[in-house]
Length: 554
Image (cartoon, rainbow, N blue to C red; front, side, top):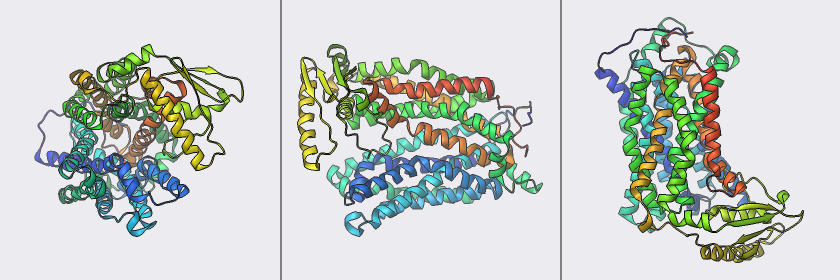
């Protein structure tokens, strides 16, 4: 793409402020909707999947997972194509309508007890529509704002959109927490969970009203007036090597690393606090929410800074710093959030003895796969209890066992057992393991009296600042990498593959790594390796983009 050297130092116009507000508000709303399902997944499963047989429940769980992450790149293709052919404004108006209406209907949808199998079928359909719409929303908002921004201010303007995922998460947590507090846990599980879905209609109404009053982006309007719009944006983006190679570099050299740093700083940090460190959910959510409030202004800071020094050094610098410091930061989280667990890990070694052929890599993104070997059962149990352990090979065919302190507890294989026999074995084994790890000093939950909340918050803020470094400038850079005629399509796909697949698979991959190695920190190798690959590829092959002329059609 052509480059320009002039910069614009004028203030933001009223129209530009309106563009940013409309795009950002709509994207906050889309992320709010998207996070609701994840936060309320356990309640929704009881409402809609409880009456289905195991095989049907497995299929629905797969589809729900696919809607959350896998379908997003397909939404990027569908709506990206429309955005490059008919315009940015109308395309991302359609995406917000699809997602908003789908979310509102979830709040009204009768459960399985009321309408039977139709309930989960409709729910999954709505979820797929939400995932597709989200795949088209981000690219539209980023492209729309960037094409309205003056040269030299694109990083600052698009950084406002980057706050929206964080604000959407924050808003969803606050609405859920407020509703739970207002109606009580029992009522919330019965009907109160619908309230956050239903109130989203007000955000939808405001977002649509504002977007209807907006004009088409100047870059697209200029290109359309000149008759240079693409007739086949998918073929141009992915069928021509000169464009496809930029898509691949944008994925591997930018968005993959950005995604894992983002998911580690916001989602895996919450998972680690609640699941690994056993911090109660309310405290963990409040700490995460506070860190988001403190850290969110840094999106704008780093977006603005990228207009001055470039996008690459900030994004890749954030990936590198994160990769280097994740281990000490997460060790420190354990020290300050649950010191009893830290002491138990140091002072009470645990050994799993098993036939290596009996042990699988427990990658389970849908949460429905059953691992039934004696080795898998004991490792999953220990990983869920946040117990570190070493592995010792046993002769082929040996039933796995675990040594905790002086006590050796044999595991069992669930293969071939009836449902009742497997449940009885599970109950007995779980009690033996729980008693042994408790005797060894492993806490069942974090003690609030021992928690240093100030230091935990500081560490979480640092993780959020890493997020702002990699995420703040990314929209501007992706927009600048591609010509106007295929921009919406080309930038949306690598963004959603990076964030939907590389980022979305982080928690389940991390847990599988922890269970494999027997180390509660071992899952961090996934984001560290991906981030370092992005640093290397980005440094060698991705060009700085801040001076590119985004009005160039080709």
